[in-house]
Length: 364
Image (cartoon, rainbow, N blue to C red; front, top):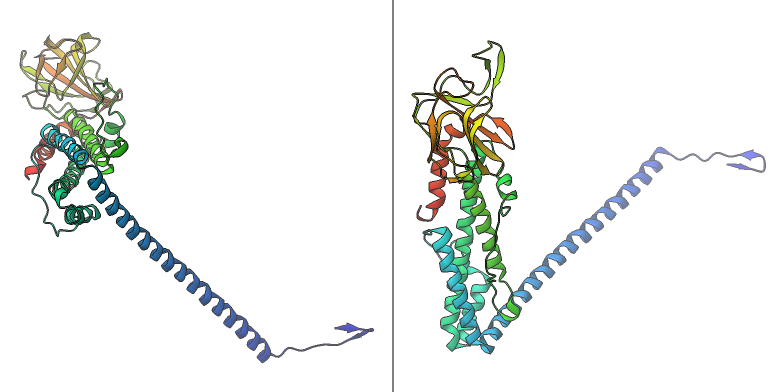
């Protein structure tokens, strides 16, 4: 320190420095402990408030349900009848048989939810509404089962679609792109024609399941011929005419002239006639960017615009076009690009098993 032209020195001992550092560290630790306590206390308080809010919501839901039954038993009965009709048509039209219902005390069982508790209370508070409350409880449990089955079938279809190298999102993105229509029949219940969120979730699950299973049915997995595939496979090979290396965009099925050719999947015929290099050719659009091509036919039996099913005969094997002998040239194209057909055809058994599992999931 400089003062009046004189310099004075203040020496801080090592012991004093250590004591100061310890004091600062202790203060920091105390501050950290206080902050940690405050954060934990805040989290516990938020959790407590959320639990209280959930209980209040459950009480309010129960009171609203009781009040709804008390005010309009006839309206409740009409709503339940409408929902029952919807459920019956849903099962009959899309779901088939369903698995046995889970035990009432099983994890995730719809019999233990807050709505079921509310309906039990209704039966005790309003004895004349007890039969309707029991019916609604059964319906809600059934809706939960339908949603679970639809989600499980969607998961199986996604697995089968990925097995052949395709993206299930492609099937979902194109869902509803074709023409749709019909009379408006809203599934609404309660005052103000509100849509029950559980039915809305069921509708979304059913739509996803239907889109994926329809897309699965349109994957080219049916053998286009009863004949064995030749060694002339997809990819680069020695061209049989020029001897040079050339790309072969499909696989060949050699066999006698007149042997039947089958559609590899359900779809619509978009070409039926001569095509350069392919001779007599048929092309089938399967949707979702998938198309199959069948070349060198001796006879074309399909017509443009015709809907064909998987395994339906669409022509006969021949040697028209750029061909050295009678055979079927078969291609699979995704968004216009040729892909190897072999994984699709080799996955035939697995895909069919998935389809059978999906359509009969309920009884499994």
